[in-house]
Amino acid sequence: RGWRRLLEGILASTMGVGGSKPLEADPRCAALAPVWGPFVDAFVDTLHANGAAVHPPPPRATSALSRFSWRRADVLTPSGEEKVPNAAASETHALRSPGAPGPVFRPAVRRLVAVGDLHGDLAKTKEALVAGGLMDPSTERWSGGTTTAVQVGDQLDRGGDEVAILLLLERLRKEARDAGGELVVMNGNHETLNVAGRFRYATADGLEDFRRWRGRQCMGAAMKHACGVGPGECSLV
Image (cartoon, rainbow, N blue to C red; front, top):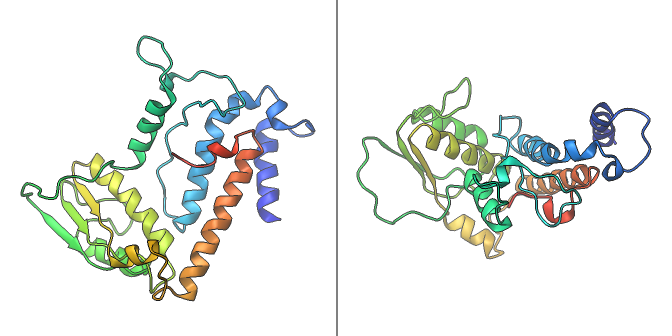
């Protein structure tokens, strides 16, 4: 009920109070919709990360599933032609993920830091990152400069902060790349166990963490749907 009132307040302040027609039928929604989806993504990601700042996703490229027909500069080529949806989606994904795994063998780097098992303990994760000179303790931003850091896996199991740890690592990966460094996040045996459906090391707190994750994802989908964003566009590519 609290989330519903928050959503109604946001939409009322944006679209005006007293309107009763569906948002997708309101012409003003064409101006709101291109930024509404990325806003909801950033809002939900920040909840997942337990309040730590999360980089807003890039604007979503228009797809055939959209109910609106606006054209955006970020989905046009320099000559003014519209990019094909798959290319635009790939560019969007590239901003959120480093892409395909790199080579097995890497050249030597000036400074290399390895971080071991995290196992759902957000406080200890932050302590390890600060101890390694990778994260500023006051801002929780990447402070490793051009350092290459490797988190050797086992983010999951045995703790209740798994989702927040995954969001923290994702954010730091981008910040490291922007600073000329690199944060490599590997899968360990516990990630493999979870993918295989073997949850013997999962805890009640961990299960509750993912229950909250699903609830927040559903809330985000409902918020997007209120502004006419179709089901196929409720998640980043």
